[in-house]
Length: 73
Image (tube, rainbow, N blue to C red; front, side, top):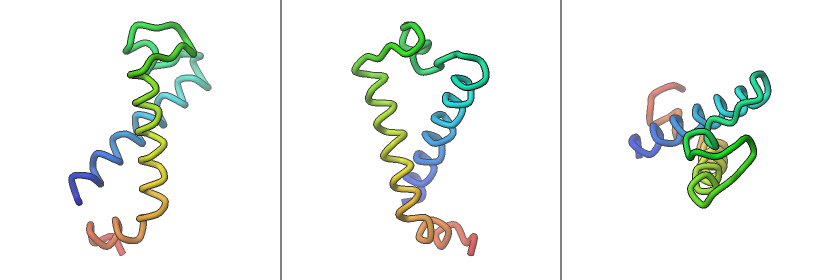
């Protein structure tokens, strides 16, 4: 489960950075990585966006469990 916790954290950081870049620099990192223009989507970019969304749900629902696993509280 700790590996999943790390993967979820990485995806949330990627999602947060992408939203920050969109807000402050008008730059879509995920679209850029997949060779598309700002706001364009492909199957792969939709997969990344979906994984970030699922990661956020996982983090929200299992926050106490994650904290217990890592000895945070």
